[in-house]
Image 1 (tube, one colour):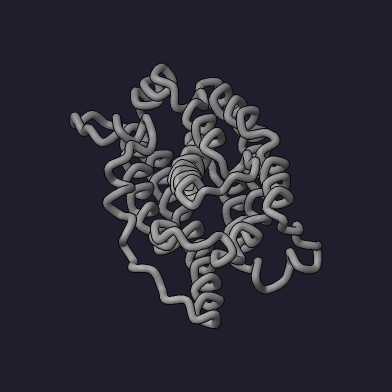
Image 2 (tube, rainbow, N blue to C red):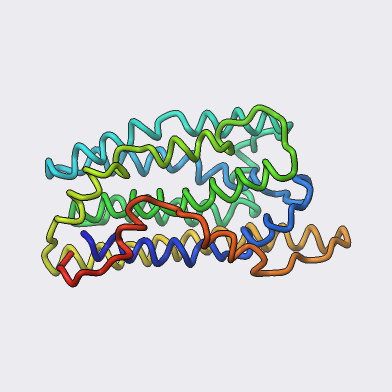
Length: 258
């Protein structure tokens, strides 16, 4: 699994340079980020099903305990999201709105990621799916929490808070013992190839969702006459912060097989 962890870490660094996160570094008023966070609703809700499907389908004991615990540790975060929408004065989308064009990209990404949970052949792939989504989540929650702190957001939030980020980093899958055990797992060539391709596909879907979100924000800002942020402004600040425990360790390459 070490090669898989390194591949996830590579994509995590790349994801942190997305223009959406550069926009946050410019500290725009929260109102200028509409349709964020509303258009993430479908994905946040669907993530709970991705956790469930992976948990129900994994059978290998060395992965089952990790996947099940990860599901339990993420349970209820969809309700945190809805509570945060209410705290921010944002009405959750109606069913008709949720299946409208502004939510198209989030639905596409969500359906594609659920499909990965169903179609993957190896339990290592199911764990890889969850590790990949968690690694991207660490980038997202860190950048959003820091942005909200910088603009002085005082409303009581949970999903978009630093508390949530700290809880994500404390998940059992990122513990020293678990990470070391995963690094020691040797995958056969077929399982390794499936896992590497899965990481690529996951980030392709995440990129598409955030590309669409950034495009909608940019379009609304242009209509309002707001100048675009300097793209890349936040890249250096991201790279000086450690993102994930296993990502740091995976950066070392001692030549062993995954």
